Length: 324
Image 1 (spheres, rainbow, N blue to C red):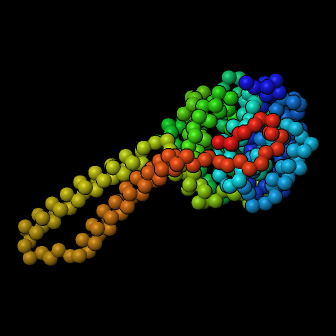
Image 2 (tube, helix red, strand yellow; image 1 turned 90 degrees about the vertical axis):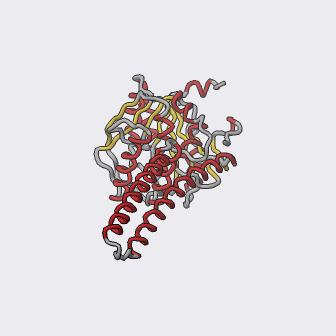
Image 3 (cartoon, rainbow, N blue to C red; image 1 turned 45 degrees about the vertical axis):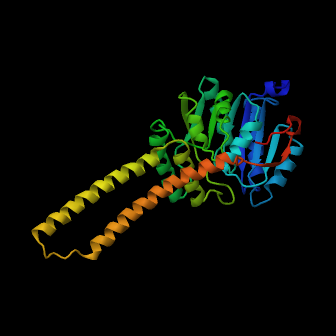
């Protein structure tokens, strides 16, 4: 049962933190002034989840939390990834409405009340879309590709940009938290929970300091989580490719047999043999890779690999054990 303090909380802002020790003070200052004005003192909380980053961000979080009881801190013992870190924040959040955003001030704290307003009007899930994104070219292409795949695998509404700057009602967050597997793709969990989705447009700001913790490798890993955790379409694609390859093989065999019958002295060269072997070998490796990806995820789920492991907390001790 929620305490009176928890019941009074209208908004929780959950922020995964990685490599942004120099940015956090400005972020918290802006959130403080914005939320005090639009939500009211004592009616909101900010949950910073330190995802075992390379700098002293946790020390900064501890220092800032000492004089701000509304600022909660969670430190993970190992790097778990952005979506897993957000799940850790969702588990300890207590607000009626929840907003997630990045830690680098590319998402403006001044836009949080706008998201909250959309949720208050009866929307379950609100995504913030940007006029123009301050990202590298490869990252923008990756976002486009992720969007393309999500429309087909997750049945994402056309035109909906899956931004990490999002807001949701408590019931939708609760549905997402029912997932206990280690491979979290939060947007997939949210889209499975509701069709009542709205978007707002905001400005995307340049990162004020440091470098983004999202590398190409992490982006590919996140895409694989989406593709294999919420759909069996990749397996079906491999099966379909196998059918096409088999049909093509029979066709080529028929062509070779026909030419051999017409020209008995025709020499069958090794290039055609090598090409055929490489073609079908590639298909077999593709199929084995897809099957292996699914099998590996099943194994790790059976072994109960945790989504995250919590080390320390700040301003959360009264809530007891929160590890998952």
